[in-house]
Length: 273
Image (cartoon, rainbow, N blue to C red; front, side, top):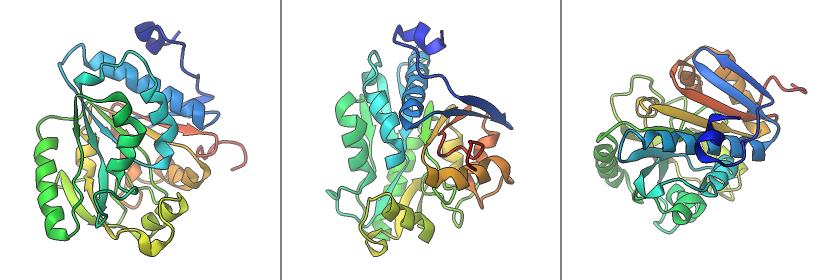
């Protein structure tokens, strides 16, 4: 019986097919996306419950991407979470999209989880249409982020190894900023087309706002959800290559309380590699 079962009384989450550790990073591999999502959701639910024993509010940052669909659906359906005591943030969002654009990550998070669970406080990025507006939005969001560390950071990994919108050309492990305006790498923009979020590359914004890597790594607990075959090369680089900004996700190996959730498609050690 798992800790999550003991704490919540709910059925035990799926067991991983394989577990390993790379430096400080725990890696759990599941049979498929559904099992991965259920297991990651059970872990986050348990972390929320445990954190609320020690503090009045829990601060959580959420990634927005199709890779997070199963995880967020499972988390939204988990009973017993005191969402009224959760302060929710987003990791990143585009610059240049209209406020009501369906591709905005704020819209994704509202539809996938926030509208369903109603966190006590939700801090979303605005919809800046220009660089000056984006700079002001970075300042506003920096003040919110700086108020206290995140208790939980829910991440994915991009096809180019990015964390949030910290693509290799702009990622800094020693970034002095908490939130910044970035130019998106072309490979990152192509992923948005491959994911079905945009019809063509020239529809994808060229700039975005993102939490920086030190901000993400400052979270007390990191849960990184990475399913699918298109992520396998990035996962392989993150786990086996040097810890460097050429693959920003490699920095996860240095965090003292991070877990990487993979499925058989994203796991570079699964059969068929």
